Length: 92
Picture 1 (tube, rainbow, N blue to C red):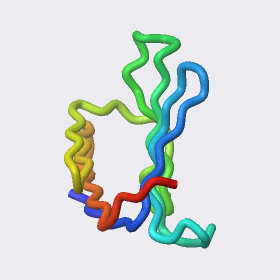
Picture 2: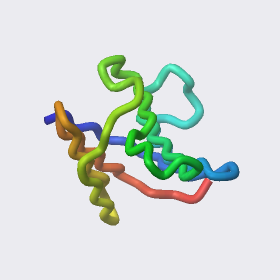
Picture 3: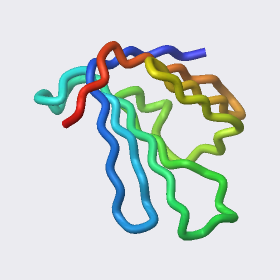
């Protein structure tokens, strides 16, 4: 299991693509981050694009289950389980 904690979260969409970005410091491009992106153009593709400061977590991954709570996002993937617990959720 990998756990990460972030202070900022933002969501955006463009066409059929949606993404959520968790950031430690939104003003520092070198700070820790975790991005998850999903597209709905091709519904048979069950993979999500994930990008992170942790290079082990970069690429397309099949997410078995996703659970979103007020203070957490939990992703269960074939090889690992990720937990993100944003400390603060603010509108950007």
